Image 1: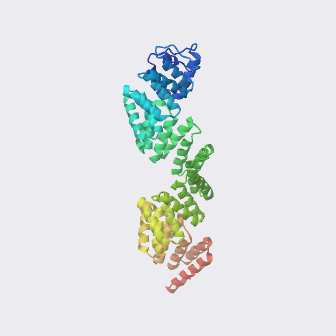
Image 2: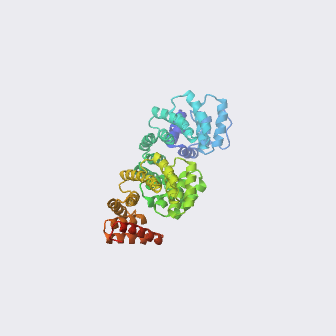
Image 3: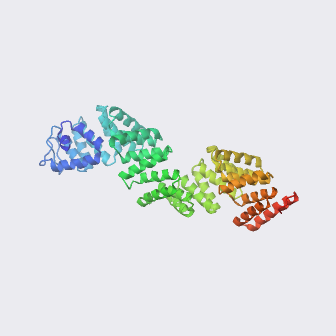
Length: 490
């Protein structure tokens, strides 16, 4: 293959096809092999003084072009560009040298130069699919996704077998949030390559953004089978596992990414979120703090750290973090939810209602926010509104233990004792019972004359109470009130 490329009279065509099909790294290594194994004694171009150490093949193609190509193959990119500039000045119509210069510029990340060179090529050959592809890649590397998509689309239309065109079109589509197109493009690239880490990664992330987590996991694993230390693949693998509730798997994958790159803010924040769901709140706080130090503009990290502080009982820090998250992103629905819950704990019931309402405007199915608002309504004397919210929460999630627990308390206060007992028992079965639930259950049983059951429920309330004296006083008050109404359990 090297001989064909080096000795062909149509060097430009062979060069373009080889670069696009095999990549510049492979081309460089083969050029070095050609230089060692195929080239004869040092020669000079008949037109331009050679650079030191350049060995030139006899060819029907321009010896000057081959001299620049050999420099490129040797990894002497700056020399290749300088030589190409010299040749180009002498021979303005030499398009081959422009393509070689474009490849050398690509190798040193001079993407604007690549665009300029491939534009020259396309002016003389508008249907040059390889030039379109390399220009698309350069645009993509400069975050110019729209022209990247346009060039890659033209290249694909001209030659559907160009792998890089599919890859760049898919990657740029991903960056434009067109995830379905990215999946289609990277699928085509994978079919052409029989497996590409680049394409597997971009398809994994596209599946991830489409909430197709099992497919994302499969593709991330495929990418890692090709490149085991790819942090981007590890990030999406851990993230996808997080969203299918495989929190231990998420911690494992994000830990691998962090071991490779300790400054990986994405891996840190998702490991922290997984630790939070595993109830390891100290670890979650540590990871989210590290993520915030790297990227203090990420509302996710502040929100998760705030939630961990909330669960740890540090309400002041929780409120501070949720405020920070909402300063960054005022529409962060989960931050609004946790701030509502925190305000509920610090008796800011008006604030609870406001934040929970904002969270529900973003996501009407958020039962945690709706339950928080119900509690706020109840504690501000609006029981009817509270019951309406709880009914909607239970319609969304019949297993909403908190909603059942709160409703049992309201029913007990409204003297609907049969309903209070039913809801309290359901909440206890869902492991959602607090002191108030057992109080409601005991009061209901007491009112219904089921004295042994009432005593058992009240004993359970006292057992878990952080302030047994207060709870004992509440129970006594309930029983005095019921005794006055004829209860025999007192």
